[in-house]
Length: 158
Image (cartoon, rainbow, N blue to C red):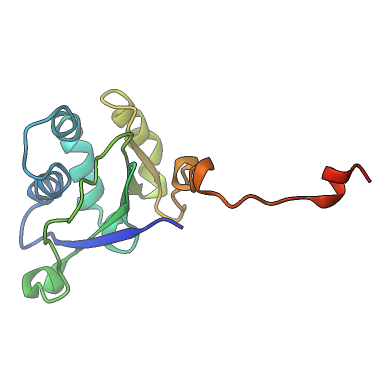
């Protein structure tokens, strides 16, 4: 089973969609310069568009890596002003450790162009229909962590 951390960012009108994405990038990169930060900032316009459409209100931006999965939501309107449901605290782990990926939720009508625009900048940052679940085979337990299941019939050659 995969460990999951969740954060909720205040978006419009507290901060515009581009500033929201930058705050998310700061969380994911721990505010440090890196190749991952450059890659995440390269898709800022596309990500801001997804945030402006309020796609991450109910469907998370999902980051997977060699460690825990991170789900990032946004709150909007009065909830963004109030900030009571927000949690932008730093994570206690590196959410971009090892083979990381970021999946952005997207409105179905915009999915094709968002996917094409992201592909120009990154293979690690993708978009999915906001109704779709995020899947990644690497999220399953590694082979060495799986329980051994013995099939006695197969073993004994019945």
